[in-house]
Image 1 (spheres, rainbow, N blue to C red):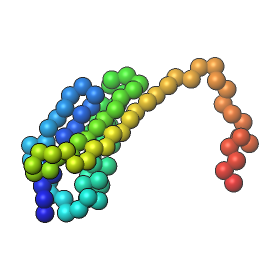
Image 2: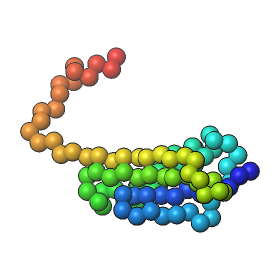
Image 3: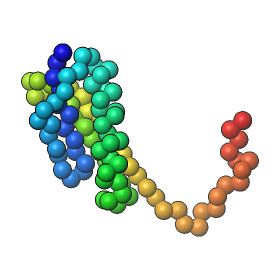
Image 4: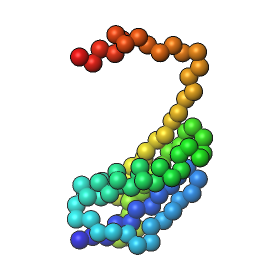
Length: 92
């Protein structure tokens, strides 16, 4: 199995993965990145305002970036906007 390194960027700081982990296929790399992003974001949101992007960059053993994924948090205060009536949301 090949070793991959999962570096994280939170919009301000890049944290490089020094240990890495073994993944046996592209789907495993993707799954690891998808699982890691929400974990990284949960400790930071909403400390840095209402907009923030979290990115994972995956490097192989040759230090080549082979995959990247981004999770974006965006919030917006709605003032004076009426809540739609129930019948607008016909999920039936």
